Image (cartoon, rainbow, N blue to C red; front, top):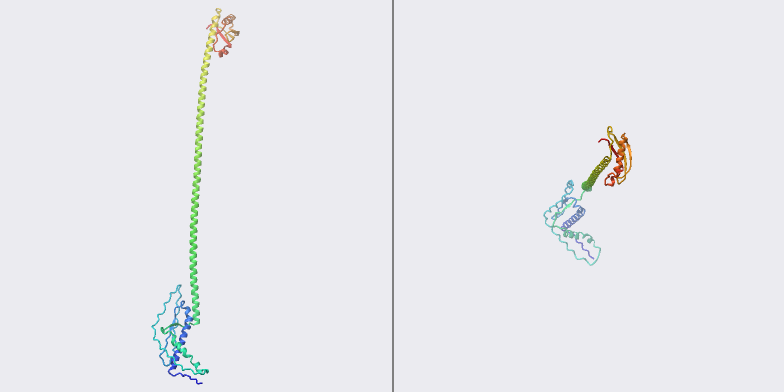
Length: 356
């Protein structure tokens, strides 16, 4: 069995190195994107420029020029969204190396040692095919220092805490404002309730005063009615008293008139009786002085004399006897026609003077 080993010519060795460099850069790019791609929103992109050299007979990997990351600015409450870096114009795409033509394998299957040496070829071929050389100038982030990363994380935590504290203060101020607003509303409601209670108290007071005034007016009306009734009763009593007085006066006048009439009637008939008795007296002559004799005569209703008694002698028996004899001769004595007046004549006193 013959094993043919393809030897790399001096011209093919630079191409393999170039492919290896490109593959390493591509892998480094993927690692950087995986490491820093998760934090691209939190920190502005800080990267370095990587140049890919393809036109060298002996490719030498130049050291990557890295710029020190600038000091991050003081975090603001709302950091502005960083603008993406402007991509540089793409560089010309490196020519793809032609893959070597593999010789046809021999029928014997020995352990192909040269097969172990050929893995770079597919890598070089893949590296030559896969890198997107449309944008050769790719800005990637440099792997940060752990201390710097820790410092940034601490600053980020402090910034978050500060933002949380600011948010907390805002929430507290908002809560205080809400509580203040609620307190103001409560005070307004209390003031409104007090005003309503005051209005109700005033309304109640006015109602009580109105009721008191109505009761006072009613009492005044009752007093006025009572006064008017009393005045009417007083006038009635006065009228009745006046009428009674008038009636009594009238009766008194009538009685007086009647008494006067009776007195006049009595006097009239007494004068008639005395004149009749005197007409029957036979006077004794030459009696000294003017002797007076008195007799008490008891009469009957018809004028007849029931009894004659000497009540006072004149001192002259002759004169006393003459008068007594004349009394008996004068019967029946004249009496008034009214029987009610007979009592005035039942016991009649008769006085006779010797000389008139």
